[in-house]
Image (tube, rainbow, N blue to C red; front, side, top):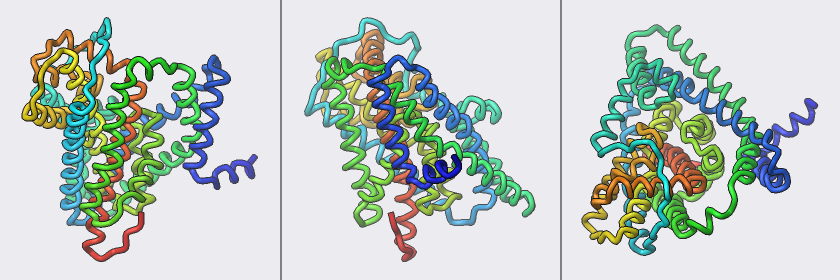
Length: 408
């Protein structure tokens, strides 16, 4: 058994995940009633979600307490890249909606959850999450609150702690990181369970009933992930970004697609940053920050669904209004983590820009939940892989300026 485990662990993690994926598809087709297999996915995602808040809290405090000066510029670059990418994603969605207008078969019922009334409510919720009780933030995985308090404590410990304290923090962060590595090694079994659950539970009717809407949504997301984001990275790095882009897709986007949780993918992204040789002091903050504000997929979802609602209701849309929608969608997407239901419940707010009633908008949200199985998977995959892409781009840009060798 030990020899078998040693050989299994010697295989590339990505190859092991692909093996789990294939087995999950086969089992989902042949044994759709064997629901016990799905528990493997639930356990894997649950473990990642459980350790992610602790990982972020400990790593950020430890990194800031021991950080060298001069990392502020890297953080600024990362934040700018996140915001530019999210805005351009909304712009791409607007133009795609003009080129391929979609009308909807509105759902007969909508979600009972009340959407936010406007962008002020979204931003207020975001600010309230920043000052959330730190213990409550850890319990509820409120990453904005976790980041805020860990930054405060990290900076305080940097100024007012002994070397022994900093060494203890480093040991704790190393121990938590090791726990994450053990969990990530279970990814093949987790992906097997997640794929099985998707294949056995969801039929193919979703593609026939809402095929055009899904094509526009997924097409926009792939265009951003494969054209827009690489172009941004290429401008920053002045070299071919696709080896880095594809690596981020392979090692981050693949698991994010099946977990459908940016929070669950934080440990996986941090492990990828470590393999890329990035500065732990930087990525321990930029990756969880990206899981909150780098929301290309959410901006696309809000924009495409809103434009579809406008086309369905026969509302004329001019270019200036569409640009305002892009800005609104980008800002709303950045605050999506502070709203229960994520990007879909921000659609009514965007629809109000066109004078579309809340009743109609909530029916559009209902359609969003129907296609959510596919939409949310792609959305999470491009959001999460983009977090690593831009964190790496910001650091590699600095390496190139310093004359250091950069390998993707």
